Length: 304
Ligand code: PSU
Ligand code: MN
Image (cartoon, rainbow, N blue to C red; front, side, top):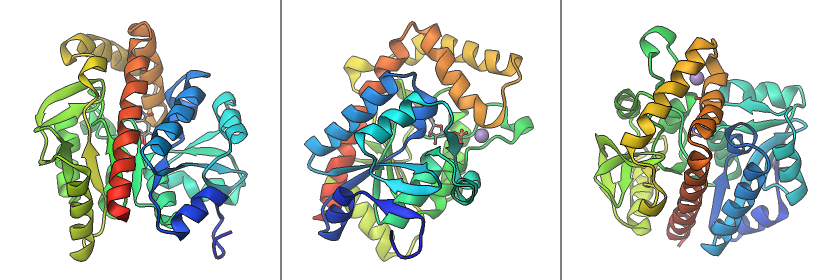
């Protein structure tokens, strides 16, 4: 227990943080709501291994029985991936899950909150939530964006999915004062594809440069995180022209079935898997591993 917070660090994570060694936070909504079993668990394990190989300690975050757990055991990860009872926790649900002693997986927003409580500054995921298409009527804007504007954690992602309204997502991030960095690219990536058709607002080309940005942000007293957009490796990408029709169909299906709120992203992800015959999942796994490797490098550069 850390002070009187409902926060439990695994012994390995606690030791790493204690000696100032690099630690990379990992989310768990990807496990419970982003991929089917058993690919979700095997991917989560492979991501942890990629972080280790990069010289950092992985800290997968979830809420179990109302305790925020930072660093899960193999068995806990397996149970989370198998089970269907976990809540999808964003900022709005975190206190509820703690108070009611529930199990829940953490989204990008909730993982940032928990990572910050634990003292972890770098976090790897696949794609962030964003402004949904049709937000003019639904007002559906992921809490991930506001979290990036307020919580000092660097999030490494492969951009955001083209099922979102990407121009508005970037506008919103700018309004909230979030540095959005194309890593080794001038283009903002779109998860399965390397280029969304939009420019990346900023560009950096090394982990050391990202660490320098984080340090400067801190020195200036600017609250909030950094979004590092790391394009999927070329060999694994699905070009935008190939994926666009599937995205449109999946989004239309969600609307037709009246799926709304927290259900939209999980529904569309599952539908994309069907529509692409599994190809979207392979790309998803490849890009998360790629982000885990970069996050480990950034954590090492920031710790050094
Ligand atoms: N985008 C993805 N894959 C995901 C998610 C987003 O490409 O698994 C998950 C992340 O956990 C993200 C959350 O934080 O969905 C956003 O959900 P919402 O749009 O309901 O805020
Ligand atoms: Mn939403």
